[in-house]
Image 1 (cartoon, one colour):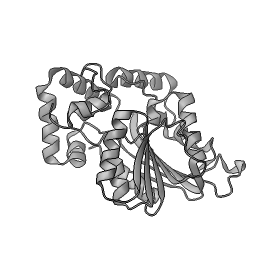
Image 2: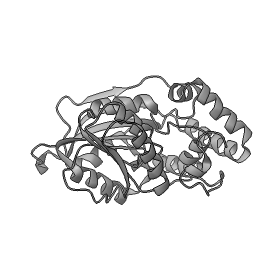
Image 3: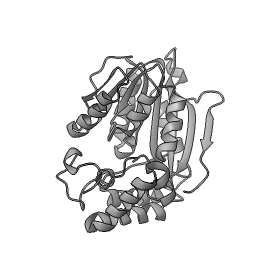
Image 4: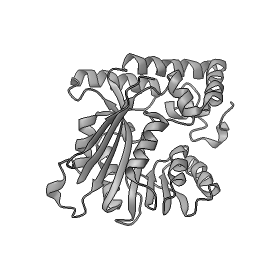
Length: 294
């Protein structure tokens, strides 16, 4: 299959009908797999201030965000990726970047084995969404442990909207996503994402949302460029099992488009690390929304 060679991708032995949705899209040549697209990732990194910082990225996947981080000239970059194949892929990208200090190690995002207070910025995108409640908490706790006082935790995830969404609707959306992407996705509302961070002593500084338009033509072109978007579309059209899966994902996203949004949040570890600050947002917290539905 054109695009990234199938043998270099994680879970390459899984058929198109059973592969996790994000790896299927990668096989078809899609590079940007984050729910809010490349634009929301760039805003997240700008707000997280990765330049001249020691940056840890949890679950870097295909390495697209690693490229964006390295372009901003951090003091150091380290990726922690549980899948050995993905780790090797991103390690090769980092080493070829010529950007100085950078590496990727095979490690669990919930238990990296790294020293306390070793990072200025921890970045995680589209990975907490795929975890259950206990693992979400474990990963956020690990990020908080790894941050230096005043350090920033930057996440880019899928969210349910509005914050008042009924529990039965949440269940319906989550079950629909799980059937479509073959991953037990459990997105939270924006308020719930903020609360999750606050429970671990992190103070929210910035919140931005964008439409969940991952497979919409305008977003495809914006994220991939015209030629790569056309190549991806041709791959979808010429591979039957993959086409069926992608169309199912697209139908699911469209069906629930009024209940799904992408969210980027930057939260900081209090310089004093006082527990009594753990459930508040910073004064003047910035909230932004990208308006188009792509």
